[in-house]
Image (cartoon, rainbow, N blue to C red; front, side, top):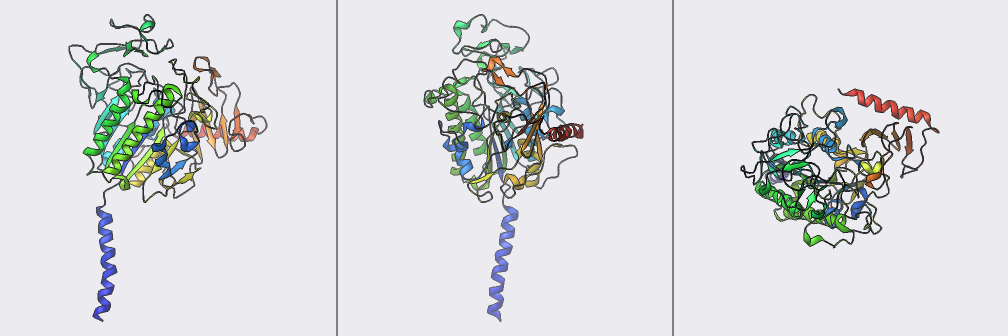
Length: 507
């Protein structure tokens, strides 16, 4: 009888110890690697045959790869706004492509992805491209404490490119201050007219490393003319060919510093946005010019993040997401021969459109997630899902009740993200430049809209704008070549009505 009781106690003890371990197991750390202007067809696990991205592919091989994942917009600022707030960007004025002197687009009262993790006890950081404005309504004072900054929006630490690599000011901001700023050489920024004595691209094209269009012919910094004008801050200038390494090193340091804690890292790496000036060790390596070389740089620095997680034994309890803010673009202001040097590579993959476009490649982006032991290796999901759904889904993971009015457009789809369910969104809205489109099941509808059908200064990039409604069946016509609106008017009306309904749902 005594022997029987001992055997009975052993499994009971094991169950109790397992329960205690589960209670004390740290919450999973989360890293979002958010690349820039990387298309569905730019990653080798999505079919790119002319370039190899083994480190990015590793996330898919050890986790789940999505084939119907969408950014909220085909341009950067609105996609980033949606990712961080769980709110469609077109619901808020001022969420278009932000100038470098724009005030903070996200209100301090707006609940963000950073707030979610911070309130759940995480150490939080944003490192890389911000492009959501800084400072008050009139913009930041670059020579003083910059508030609000990401540190006022849910992030304990920030090291950011204020806008984009092709926009002034060409300085990093760490927490509330410009890095390495000499106050005897104060920064001033203008997007209205030239200022200061530094040369500008329109007057001194002979100083340029890469020829630029008129929009990108402002102040010349590091031999590259930018959008906008600035004076001062010379000691604080970034070095373009060291940018990817610089921000990656900051990300690695943040991970190392917080290896004993649960952390959330929003790593918004700038590759492959223009101007494409990858580090010298990549030049010529892709055989596809600067854009291809920048893809290799992106892949290597993604690998550094994964390798550090392995070396610190953090991989098993870290959820890693890789995606892109919008679709690809070739000619985006600088003559770096991106189109000429494609060598048969198709950045959009099988889809139609580019960055700026309402066609599918504008927002259908690579997305993959790894969480060893939770997500099965080598999974592929065709579920419809958006980056806008991260906030509600992560709240579910953390058992966190979102405040009222937070993340109004974010759907809780953690089972989809983790490969436990194939039932994604019923519909999603895609934003172009300008206008919207709606995707539901196999069908996509683009309402009539004003604006150019092609952008002539960007290699005749097709925008999706038309004076007639467009209806496509993506199952039969993945390239959006056959407008079926006149053949199926009831389906077109159904999607048009649904789009209007969603627009009116949240004020």
